[in-house]
Amino acid sequence: MKHFCLQTFGNKAIKQPKYGNLDRVFSRTSKFAAIALATVILTASTMTIVADSANARDINDEFLKPKTSLFSVYQSWKHKSDAAHKSETDPKVTPVSAPASSKTSKAVKVRQKSLSADITDEEILEQNKKDANDPLEPLNRLVFGFNEVLDFIIFTPVSKTYRTIVPTPVRHGVSNVIANAKMPVTLANDILQGEPERAKTTFIRFLINTTAGFGGFVDAAEAGGLPKHTEDFGQTLAVWGVGSGPYVVLPILGPSSPRHIVGRIADTAATPTTWIMGDLSLFEQSTPTIAELVSTHESLLDDITNLRETSPDFYASVRDVYRQSRKSQIANGNVSIDDEPLPEIPDE
Amino acid sequence: MLKRFPTRRTFTLVSLIALGSLGSPQSLLAATPAENFVVQVGNAIMAAARARSVGKFRSVLQSKGAISTIAIFSLGPYRKKLPASRKREYYGLVAGHISKVFAKHASKLAGQSISIISSRSRGKSVIIKSKVKYPSGKQSNVTWRLVKRGGSYKIFDVNVQGIWLANTQKTDFTSVLKRNNGDINALFAYLKK
Image (tube, one colour):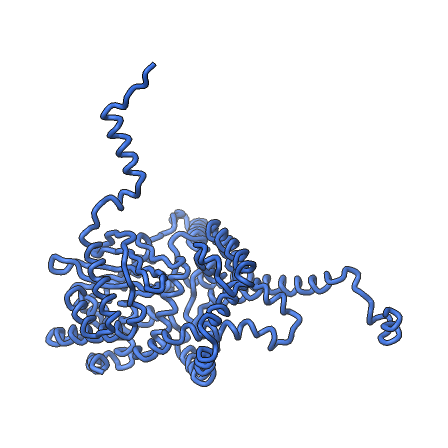
């Protein structure tokens, strides 16, 4: 056989790399390292941008930001260092502690003003802008419109066909397989968020479902009392205190934010299928993403239809629902009774 | 040597410890009036959802919901645009609108039973966390925000699967007003649809 190969392809054809498949692995490692480095740079830039624009941020973003966080520590440090720097140049100024409530009190003032009857039309417009936190709204609406067309032409018909021809248990199975493939990402983010109990649950779920659950098709772990949960790097950044930034609508993927986009990139780099399918064609590499899009769209089809039918401005409703559900995901599905700033209740 | 028989004091102490270990103090205490109210409202809403009846939803909302407070909240910064003379009409339209939206989402509200997890006062309101069990066996967290109106509790807001409904309604109403330069008649026309 070796002789035949030598004759046919020459020596190069059967020459094995010195370290076998390690070369391919190193090639993938360098790809991953590049992606990871880009992610870290993007994260750092986002944190800096968000921190620098902190004073201009609106009430809505304040709602999304955790109270005790690396971000607030960074802000406190930044304020102290600014004050210290100022005190060096101006002897009258002494370093002070971070005014933790200054931004909050400003936000509360705006909210109280919105509750009062003497608010002017200009202030109403200003309040609307702040509530929306959507400086790219014209562009976002354009992309949203494009997504709506895609939804009408492709996603809804595909979802409906998928629902019609594939029985419910099989659809659940497909959804379970997709969720199981993402468990390593959830596990990494559980750890990064300092949640050992949830990390343990994810690890055991992955082991059980991959083996006893036939590669994740059956959610055997849930039946055993280990409920499913998901985490992503966007949520981890939020837990670390990185602000969400303004609302962004992505083509095909839909509602997002700079923090969420950075999270998506990191999660894609950390997903095992990205590595396993690294050498395949672009279409083959996109198969898991397409499967996930179709499966998720099908499961949300009724909710999307209901929201579209009952909402006077579908764009604004989707933006609101996205923000609220994202906030709920970051809080692991909990509504914090103690910490969450709730809207003011007006007097009748 | 004979063992000493436990005295009555020791016996009482042991009984109290045993009782305490049966469950949390909350489980031994009676539910608060706010918690009872939520169970009552929750059951009424689930019954209306199972019946898919707009009329039943409206009846529950008018008797148990703080409709005027929700209606004013939903106007956001545009609340000064509502003339006092049209308030009553507006409240009625809001009650009808919420009932229709609830009926549209009836399948999500058609639970089987409701149980209280915790409750806490928060400023002018009381926040109650509950768990709703569905016929399929699935469970969902539902959080309620109550306010006191006329000496009794009323529902101000409900959080289902992470979404506060009053906030969503505020987004809808303010977007109608924004697109129509704050014209309150446009909102009335939308609510009458």
